[in-house]
Image 1: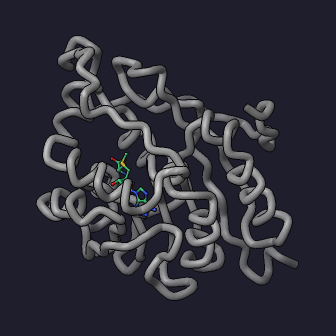
Image 2 (image 1 turned 90 degrees about the vertical axis):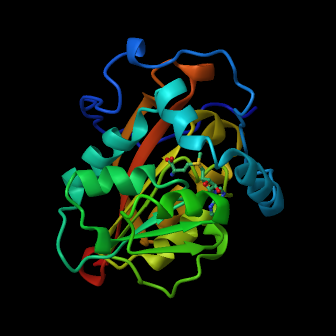
Length: 245
Ligand SMILES: C[S@@+](CC[C@H](N)C(=O)[O-])C[C@H]1O[C@@H](n2cnc3c(N)ncnc32)[C@H](O)[C@@H]1O
């Protein structure tokens, strides 16, 4: 274990109200963690695909009704502070899973045609397709995002960076247009145990690719506080030529 990572100190803001479930009384608190997995950057793509193939069918029931997953509305509200919905925008939801973040964005005003989902697990994307909140769903690896440079106005990734290795941050920066926002969660333990995540964030800033503009959290990820899971939420802005000076 390395020491605590050095993170640029930034103002964190008040956590918005949750609206997935109102209190722990509304969820079935369970100690059945049988399908609780903790994937790390050490898992290879085949292991990730296999894990999510198995967990996809009951994913949302477990996340929302048993664990009280808190992040989608919180993340959507913070993202909305920086990115206002427009009709012709393109947002990448990277590691879209069953579509909870796409749904959160859609509910807060981002049009379906603006939201594009990417995930390594086609089983998870099959769940996401049912929601009809995505313009497109594409199977692909966050470390080799199958889109050209500057393809999206903004990118967002929730609970996927940190399963995907640190090079996923380079990829999110690459496919986002200059001036766009790149928002990602990451678990504090991952930052602590895998210094390459913090190093990559700082390298991209030192290279003038992006600038950290917001760090939120750690946010409790489940109302029933499953395994004390928390996430930081980072928002970066990809610099355009003028900002680079
Ligand atoms: C815990 S789920 C989160 C899904 C969704 N973002 C949410 O908040 O509910 C993690 C997702 O990341 C995807 N994932 C993990 N590693 C990935 C990679 N290298 N490339 C693309 N997707 C990946 C998994 O397949 C899974 O659907």
